[in-house]
Image 1: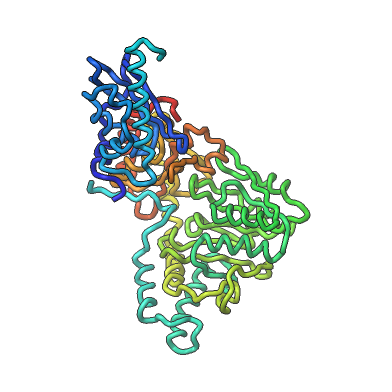
Image 2: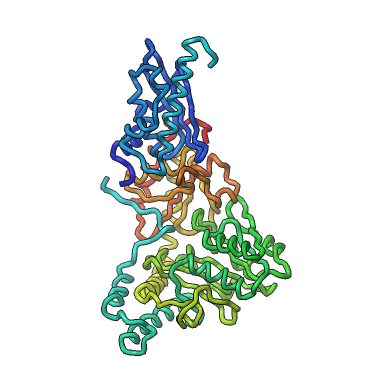
Length: 127
Length: 385
C-alpha cells in the first residue's frame, strides 16, 4: 500500500481547509522542486494556537499532511511551533513514501513561518 | 468502495477472453521454438504464421513485411534507428509531441551526429503538413510522426504528411500504437513506409508488438543475433504473445467499427457531463479529430495527481498529465507544446475509454469528478498554480 489509511482519510476529508479572516499569523512554504505549496493561518490566544486553517496546492500527501498537522498543532504554544520538525508532520500521517517526503517539509515550513509571523505581530515587529 | 471503473485504456487494456484462449496452448502444449525443424517447432511456427497473416490481412500488407517485437518502444526504436543507421548520417523530422520512444531515440541519434527537427503543434496538438514540407532538407533521411497522441488523442494528418514524404522520396515512419485496431489505417493511401503497432492497447497481451516495413525500404537491424524475423530482429519470437496479437487483430476487425461509434458517444457524454457540472474545466486536444475513447480534461487550479488519487479512492482508474516523482513535477510536454497555460496543464487528467466502458460507468465518473475537484479546490489557494 503506497499511502497509509490515515493519510488517505485526511486526503478524503481534510480538516481545517480554507481561509481565515484576520488571522494572527500567516506563513507559506513552497517546495521549489515540484511547486507544492502550503499556507497556514493561525489564531492565537494566550500564546497558544486556538484555531488553524490551511490551503495547499499539491499532490494528495501534501493535502493530507496539512490536514493532519493542523489537528496536531491546535492548543500548542506558538513558540513551540518555531522548531516544528517535518518528522512530526510525517508521523501525523503514519509515514510518507520516499518520493513524497517533501509534503512534510512544505507543511512544517509553512507552520514555522506562520508561528514566526504570529510572534512578530505580537511583539509589534515587522510582519 | 464497490464499483470499479477503468478509464485508462490508452495505458493498457485487459486481454480479450478469445485472445487468452488462443494463447494458452502455446505456453505448454505448442511450446516449441519456431526455428526448430521438428514437429514441436513446426507447431509453434504455424501459430506464428497464422498471426502474421492475420496482421497482414488487417493492414493490407504482405506478411513478410512484418517484424514482431517486444513492444511499441522497440518498434519505434527499430523504425527510427533502423532508418537512420541504414543511411549513416543525415537529417530526421519528427514532432515535439511524439512518444518518448521516438523522442529519445531521436535525441540519442542527435548525440551520434544526426540532425533532427522537432516540429511544433497548434493549440489542438495538430502538426501542420506545410511545416513538414518546409523542414525537408536535401539530407533528410526520414520522417517520424505519430498517428494519434496518447495523452490528448489528437489524430495527425498522416496522409497529407505521407504525400509530402513520398513527393520528396523520404521514408515515412508512423507510430500507430494508439490507433492500430481503433481507426482505419491505409498504409498505401497514406504513403507510409514503416508502421509501429502494439498488442496490449487492443486487448492483446503486453510485451508484444510489431513494425511493418514496406518492402524495399532500406533498413538495418538494431539488435543482432539469430536469423529471426528475416534477420531484421534477432531473438526467439514470443510465440504465445504473437498468437495473442494475431487474435486481437482478428477480433478488432470484427468489433472496431461499432465500438468506435459507441465509445465516441460515451467519450462525448463524459466531457459534456463534466463540463456541465465542474466549473473551470477544459478539454485538451482536437474537438473532433481525436481518438474515439480519449478525453483529456484540465481542472484549473488543482494538481492532477491529487485528482487521480481522489478518483482512485472511488474505484476509478484515470491518469495524470503531470506526475510528481522524486520531488520534481513537470507539466505534460504535450500540453506545453500545445501552449496550454501552466495552471491548466498542471491539472490535466486523461480519461481513456474502451470496449468494456458503459454509460453507467461514465455517469459514475461524472458524479465522482465534481465533488473530488470541488473538495480539492476548497483546500487550494486560488492562483497558486
